Image (cartoon, rainbow over all chains, first blue to last red; front, side, top):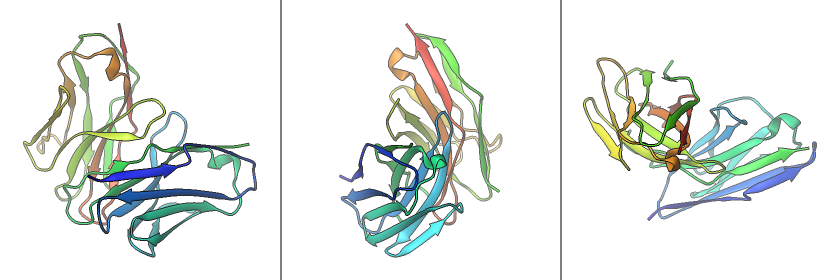
Length: 114
Length: 112
């Protein structure tokens, strides 16, 4: 069966510090991978998605970036965090073909920028 | 563009009450529809899905029917429990870009 791992679970970082969040998927090949952000009490905002190694699509301009160095690894990064980067970050995957594949989410990373 | 609209929350019910959370969508083509549930501090879990008109998705006592004529996918449960307290998201998947569109979420609180 497929599993998705996301870490760390919680993170407190000062403004201006770098960020690296990692997500890996097991049990499937060539998944579509996604990073979402959820502000407190609000809905989901798609940040990045990837349909293959090295292929990243950005949905919103910001100081975050994403990379996919391996088929089942997705990394969210920032060189300098802003206060507004605080939130709940969720990684997700779906099968690469067809409309019937749902999104499968990790347990999320709670990021607090102080 | 494609969009999903959900009823405003929070919704507060007593245990064993009937639940309906409305969801309507706007989309080109024939999207797949989903309901997700998010418990406090956790990621979203797929609750149920429907991939074509008149399909009924069901899981854990929850049901939703894909109504193309009214572009709706309302979530229902006959008797809610305290453990159903969570945020519920309606979503659709588009026919291009493998992207998903989520509604804003509806917070449900079930009181004993």
